[in-house]
Image (cartoon, rainbow, N blue to C red; front, side, top):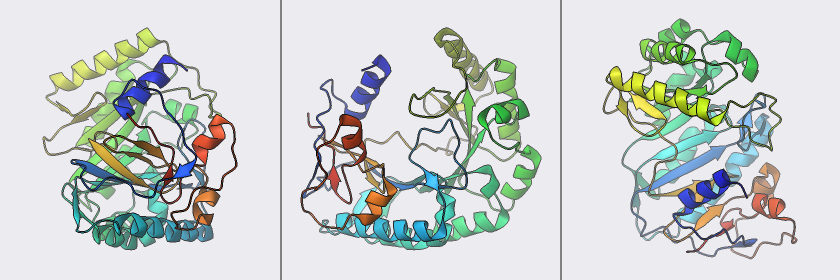
Length: 339
């Protein structure tokens, strides 16, 4: 197992002990006493599949999305019904995929979650640039969304072409964003793309803050072996040098560093899907980190929809490690790590 994989595992589980995967259900998720608990909901549907994206995603269809949401609601109800009273959580975060494709169902999903949880720090959602439209933003605001994160990747046409994405016009984005204010407007960028320079990244950072963003996230490009991406990987030293230059520039501009990859132009503007003491995940591929356990839902959308909401042991046949990793929980069966 690679050093990066081992470090990621230790960061996620807060332990140096290895994973022990169990292809079975847990009858109880012990989250009631967890402090600083965040909620995550995964919506796996996309209009097209980006080759560089490592996350669980499938092509969108209205019928499949509705079946998935029905299953998701059952999972939320089953988990929440274990509580004897409403539990305070820090936040609710919708990721994907392209979560806005399920926008007509967001009210129902959020209302169901609010039956069991009190959200204290807002609701965030990821957006594809194509979905930043006045009607979509109004729909999100009416559902209670307070924070949005737009996956720009780069404003530069040459890097959009490298990633197989369409160009994004910053000025047009700013015009739409001005019509529907959110507490946090974050824009996501990728750095360490082939031949990318600090000047390229500086231009993206400036364009973001000048066109509606009050928060940015700049993540390194990672060549995940299980994706179909053919983008060459930048060397570690060059990648680190770029990150140091980005950091120095943002600090000089007076931006607040909210995590290793994120900066904000306003102190109250915060957005992150990861920095939680504990989190509870709903939907396919969603992870759950509790005091002594790290759990992963099935990566299969079909498996997720087909699984009945019961507490019986999983009937999955014994498989290779990668298959067990991808078929272990719905709605509460999980791979589990215990310290």
